[in-house]
Image (cartoon, rainbow, N blue to C red):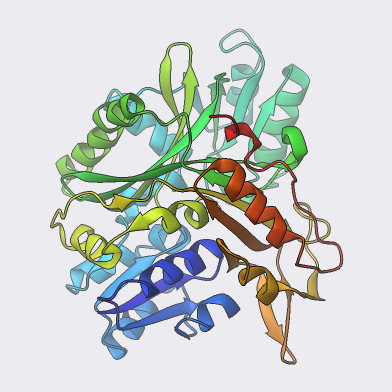
Length: 424
């Protein structure tokens, strides 16, 4: 099987790495890829936001299966175009992608299908949004979300009215998030532990792939500004058999059924972010692709024929759940100086090969590039260093032993990824 993976981050490197271990995969192309994916297969240039260009690439290369990493190409309709030409692709249609790409759409969909989530209000004007955050309806803290994609920066958990009103004005008046903030969703603030569950859907059913806990804040003990994710561990001790079963029945299957009723079968990854409240599990948000850095810790635990599972989902042919290892993984993100507000590029990176040679360690590239024959930084989140072991402690120790082998000027990372799972 010849496979094309779309994207260039740590998630895509993890997908390519996992597919390369499948005996049914003969060749892997990554578009545009990164130095990590180029060491496994072949990187090719294409405009991911041009579905026609991506389709032409797949046709020219005689690709058997395309796997979409990021959400933006899905929002642009790449999966719709591929399916109209009979080409297997892992990823939902444009309407399916709206579960992630529009917070208002996702909330309306959950409301129609009885999926548990926080109470909310969708506001199209700054005036209505300011009224919604007055405190009379949801109290404080309250959550203000830009409706569209805002690179992970469009959500504010406001402690009081002044902070909530500032978040509304930033999105709707100052246009800090561009068109993504022209509409906002105001939500009650849920409380409880968070966990993410991952499923692969074939249009009728879904296979459970695993769970993880992400760490969004830049500093230890969940302090500082939110990021795209500073690390994760898998599986989550919170993901009990009862929780997985309940999530499948009350959340995932209604998503699949709802899209089937619309005549647009949901075929692709579904990432369900849950808050375990006193009233039960409720959806914080959906992602329509694998998470990053969650993919880097979940995918190494999936054994067996992964490519066949993906192709079955793309073609609407359920092939059953994957075989999952009982091991644990801990992934630590190494970020560049200034992240998340900014990012340094062109800074030389040393020690990646030494780190990757340690037992139970895999290093996934994200914001890296080759410059004059040397690996350098090229983004905010640079690498994800993953340790694997029989216990969370072993996985954590291996990950941080590898982190200590890597150096680049301004490197920052959390030292507590995995601690939440220790002792469980």
